[in-house]
Structures are given as C-alpha cells and as structure tokens.
Image (tube, rainbow, N blue to C red):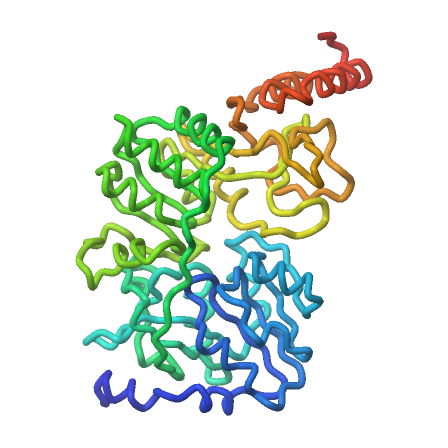
Length: 444
C-alpha cells in the first residue's frame, strides 16, 4: 500500500490540470469566506469552453472573475459585499434563501459534480484539516470524494490553520485517500479589518453587556458591536463564559487574553484577523485544543444550542415593528446579507435554561439626508422577516433594552417606543394608541 506521501504526490495537479478536469457543462460548489479556494476560483475563468456552469457558494471572499462570466450562473446562500456588487453589476448572481444549517441539505439536493475547498497541508498521518472553515463544506466534500462520478478538489494552502474538530465529525479533517486532487497554492486568508465604531454602536454594546452574566454561553456575530461587547466584558468582573457560536472573530481573542473563557470553544467557521487565525492554528501551540470546529448542521442545530445552560445569542437586525418581528437580512425586498443562523440561535437561546436571545437594532437610519425610524408601526410591504415575533426576546437600541417575551400584542408597542429615536416617539405613540383603539379593548 502506498504511503500517504506517495498518495499525495499522485494526486497533486496544477491549476491548468484543474481546468482540463472540468466540463463545458458543469455543476460546482465551494466553501465560503476564509475557506474559499481562492487560487482555484481565480483560475476558473481561464477555461475557454464554458457553456453552462452552475456554481453554489456564499459570502465570497473576493470578486473572482468567474462571477462575471456570462455562461456561469452563481447561486449564493449568503450575500456579502462581493455578491451585492455582482448583483448590481448585472452578473448572473442569485440569492437562495437558506438557513445556514440548511446549506448541507441543499448541497445534497444540488449534488454538484465538483466540490472545492481549502485544506491545510497534510500531516504525517495523511490527514488534511478543514481549518477555520468546517461549516457546510465538510459533509458535501466528503460525499463527493467517495463518489466515483464526482470530484473533490482541494487547494492546499500552508496558511490554512490546523484546527481540531469533534471525533464524531472526523475531527475536522480528511484523509488524503479520500481526496481526488490537490492543488498547492499559498495565499493569504480573507481578513476583516477592525471596523470603526460609532457612538450609537458603543451605546448598544454597553446595553448588551449589561444583560450578560457570569457563566453564560455566548454566541456573537461579526462587526463592531460584538467586538465592543467582548472588550467591555474583558474589562469587567464577569467571566467563565462558554462559547458555542456559528462564527468566531477577533472578539474571541480579546476574551481569551483576559482569561474570561472556560471550557471548549465550539464554532463552525472563523473570520477575522491573522492574529485570530494564528491563535486557532494547532501548529502554533496557542490554541491547545480548546477550539473545535464542527459542521454547521451540528453547531446551528437549535436542539444542540439549547443544551447549553444560559445560552445568550447576540445578533443584529435592521428594523422591528410593533408586533416584534425583525428584518435582519434585507432592505425591503433587496437582499443585503442572508438568513444565516440568526433564527437557529434565537430558537436555541429561547429553549435554553436561563437562555436569552438579544437583537441589536439602531433606533434610526439616515437615508438621503433624512432620518427614518427603525422601530415602526408596520413593516414596509415586501419586508422579509428574519426572526418571527414569537422568538424575539431582548431588543436593544442605543436607548436601552426591553424583553418582549411575555408581553402581549397590546403591550409590545409601548415597550418598544422608549427605545426609539426621540424624534419619532410622539408619532409612534400616536400610532400605537390608534392601533389600540382599532384592534384592542384596552386604553392607554
């Protein structure tokens, strides 16, 4: 039997060899964000005989030329800046409304002939790590690798960290025996610069921090507010936090360095700075096996999330109406991001003993020089609901927080109004009172 090194050598190909493997009519899928095989995706547009390609991906790391090819149709399960740009440019880019933990289900139905991702270099046992991007690629990649009619192709990138996983999910690794082809290209992982933080975001973060208790298990999103929450918690006297999060970013490092995290950190993908990636990399010895990556079907399963005591989910929304339903992924009918895992974690926190779901919403927004309220009587026609009212608990704006759970339809508007921008409170109160007179018996 050949050694792992011999097997690896037999499966190593060039970027041009990759193009020869692909058919004029093709179905493909790739990992997302920092796990995308950048070199492979950048090279695909060099294939001269593309007739009809269908590509499933999400949260693109870069504006790959293939995205604008007229014979390539891209389906994204989560929009980022690249997808929005491609859509505005008139490319064949379409959004597929999927919860993040449904990506694997769709991938199985789509059944792409070619699945591509980024892996770390092979170790002495013949294993390659999925690194910071287990998410929805682990299972589809493995299934493609084991199907003789399909191809599993990896970009082997020395910069991809080696990250431990759960034993029942293959320890976040795959054997070289199970991979069809590898292409060796070193390229930097996608990094996110530290965002500038507004006074509004600082106030929201302070109100969120006040809701967190020692011993809570945390799920946080990405951006300025989660990073500020981490900074405030790191400076405070609360700690012994657990982490069970779809995404981890640089706020994790802030909490780790302050000694605020206890136990194992469970996540499905990481997106942040090189400092974060260096800490996660088992080859550097900083992680020490404390962080484990698992498929999104496990991490985002509400029943798994709810098993964590005092589970606190922290997410963001664009707009909320008097009933408590929240828009978080689209502006009107225009897709901005994606369904993601917000509802998964809202449900998990809701059913967790002592759990709390927190949704952060800026009270207002400036549009064409005019201020508009993000707390409204009724949502604009066509608005897409991300979190339904019956799973909304804590709502936080820069003016405070309120727990909508246990409040009736009559009570919710009056509980939300103090969180609105002062310019709109009188108008909102008049709308709430008119609504009350029309639909309810009580008077305020």
